[in-house]
Length: 214
Image 1 (spheres, rainbow, N blue to C red):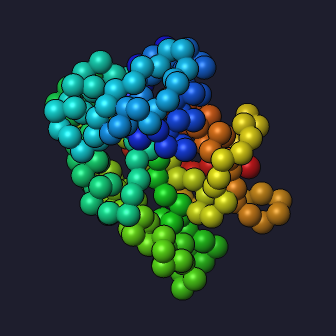
Image 2 (cartoon, one colour):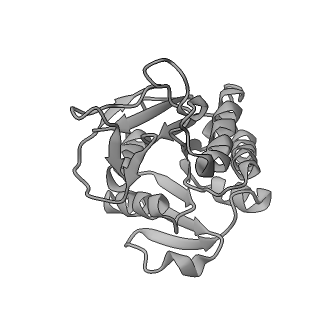
């Protein structure tokens, strides 16, 4: 079993990653800036107060981790790039035995049928742009890392991504959304967590981005 640190564990995605990983018997550290927001954690998970951009906190947690999972978000773009820089520094400092990084990315950097990023399409909602810019910059930052840090960036669908049912099924793609029979790309937070933990257990997308859908 793996030792997994989840940053942003109080959020909709992070809490589900914690639950999925703990249910499979992994040793999970759930990290939130306010540990009280984590509530009752499942067996096999422990709560830690911390910030993903705090160098000392991340370095300490990384020492005994096999995977660092980032499910953080906010309207300030620099949060994402600072988070990437902090976890990459911590992983790099530990050398070949350093933890892998798995980042809950955005869907705006995925490509539509014309090969254009959803972010660059004229109908992309203005209110989502601050979040999307940060996630796009985070992906750029990962792609600029050297081979001394191992990462995976997991994009949800660009639109239909919400809490729902854990169906136990999903399909994967790379830079284009995974579209169902109805022509839409969609997945629940529960199945997103399933796919992310599957990637921890059976790495298939090292040093690249992938996406999921039904």
